[in-house]
Length: 208
Image 1 (cartoon, rainbow, N blue to C red):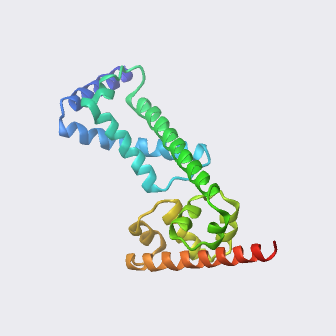
Image 2 (tube, rainbow, N blue to C red):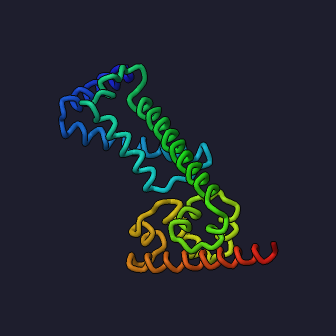
Image 3 (cartoon, one colour):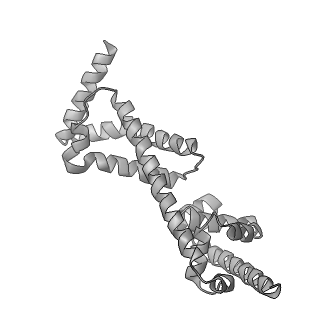
């Protein structure tokens, strides 16, 4: 009986959504956005990936935007073979997996671009775009070594901006500093990393 009541309630909610009832959309978000957020976060952890709050919220926003597309086409296809919560959890998991797959593909492409750079250009470290590209190849052995020589503050700000893709406002909040301090702090960290790269490049050339 309870299952039938739930089924009828979900059908009512979907019908109201398709009819573009604003109250129904608010009810839908209130009931399910927490579930979708939690499922995305849990899926990432299953694959030993840590997604920051901003990334999870972006994935969640994409999911709900997709549900609205083409006059709620996805919701119109919902057949009620499972609960609406279960159906959304499956969608959240698949969306998270696709997001991580795309991120991995972008990372591999960045790694390939670095591999194709002339070694002397990487060692010199004079161009900011090369530095940014190197920072993005977070799996590179040389980058890990260079970052390991920086202090914790420099490591954190570079990680947050270049690898995690956080905004100045997010970095400001996470580090407990003013937003106006983020830019100078990031520039100093890049300068120190570049100096380490130059020193390392000179040392490598000297021992050849």
